[in-house]
Amino acid sequence: MSRELKGLTRMNTDTHNPHDPAPSRGEGQPPDPGHSQGTTIVLNLEEVVVHSGRLNYAQLVKLAFPDDPPAETSDIVYTITISSPSLGEISLARGDKPVPVEEGMVCHVRTTGRS
Amino acid sequence: MSARPAVLEAVLAPFFNAGLRVSVKNGYIRVHEVPVVDQGRAVRRGTLIAQLAYTDHHVTPPATHQVWFEGPYPCFADGRPMEQLRHSDIPGGEIASGIPANFFFSNKEKGWTSYATHFEQLHHYWRLITDQARAADPGCTPQLGRHEPDVDPCTGVFRYMDANSLRGRFLHLSAKFSGLRIAIVGLGGTGGYILDHVAKTPVAEIHLFDGDVFDIHNAFRAPGAAESTDFGGMKVDYFHDIYDAMRIGIVPHRVYIDEATKDQLNGFDFVFVCVDKGPARGVIGAHLMAQGVPFVDCGLDVSASKTEQLSGVCRATVVTAAKNDHFFERAPTMAEDANALYAANIQISDLNAMNALMAIMRWKQHVQFYAAAKGYHQFEFTSDLMAMTKSEVPCDAG
Image 1 (cartoon, rainbow over the protein chains, first blue to last red):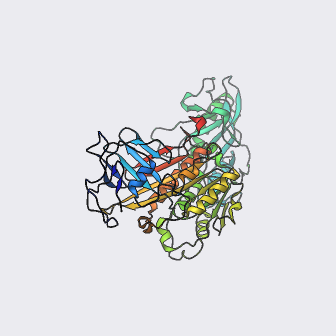
Image 2 (image 1 turned 90 degrees about the vertical axis):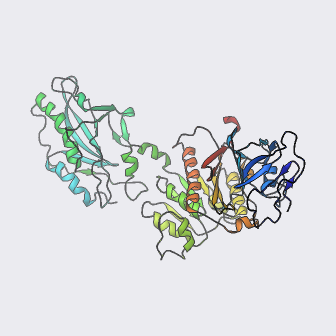
Image 3 (image 1 turned 60 degrees about the vertical axis):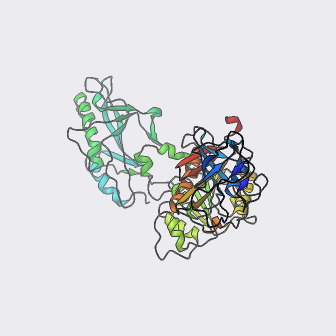
């Protein structure tokens, strides 16, 4: 299971998920200039280091569910919520502008179909 | 409720025995033909009014010492207004449908704590006002003779009066729900809590759609407390039987809504969609949009962290005549994916209730019961942050 995207590296910072046999720490593509240290955000309750200045809907889906089909075109609808120091509480839908990645950002990428 | 429940006899007897003409209507008790001095020192007639909440078996004691008055502002025998009565004027001259009033009074004796009876409450004001009338015209308070109290039957959808709207003096606002026909599709956790709140508004009809059985696990994410004998029947019948105790107009439909049954949703004023199958959500959403029926689609996720703590995301997607282009980008209409993350199917009653409350409060904005600062059509609550996102504002609303 790949945890890498161009410009994005997911780093598991505590005991790794039993569903995930390949935790990756500090590996990955060369980061964007100016983001060499990466930015730690919380994604679906896990800390993740992001080496990218901005993230859009599909990139967040890829980071959260690497095995899911590409979110630009898939029929899966994700509910993405972001709490960021500069933007406050926002919702991100397919086609929305990418959001700046910031320390302290808390994101959820979920499918909200239960009742 | 019968026209004149026996329980009212104790309330009305003291008025009857005092020779006062009294009537009961729409949650109010009125004393008629009260002699009152006007500012021109003429003795005229007015009406004293107090709230009277009751069922066939129970009368609520007076909640306050305050009363209303219909008629000229009461004056002393010399024509000076009795300022010690004054609280406020009644805008519009009516406190409820068919209950005209001009003034709200607030006056109590030193050391007053409560009135045990409506007679004590109203007689306090009756005495203050008529003492002055008698000083101006000693013959103005003859015994009126024994008038049978005039009690209007309670009407409406509730099996007893809406004493909450009465006590809070917002009956005229609750009237915004009158006559509405509402559907709830799916009576799982979220749908159950939606019913819990819709049932307490005076909407005319609440139609429940669900083809599923009420089983033991459902009790742990439904409002109220199920008995051990409640399981195995249909969900819609279980919920109908509970809420039927409070109101009429709840109609159970023991069907799932799909392509074959979707026309049963035609013509409703508002639909709450609380299903957990994506394709069913898609069929229902597309059909309601084609029919021009406004609705809110609810859905939630509960996931566990590696440290075995839960986090929930609740979503309410609203579709109205003002905006519907976001539905298929916001509501999951795909078939269930096999991702192990969802296989556990964790559901928690308070997250169902939270999701229901998001839908209910937005619906109450839609009918203009609640003020809406913005016309948001999408809401997401995250429990780890206790935060709400708001989005999808109609273009012309900015």
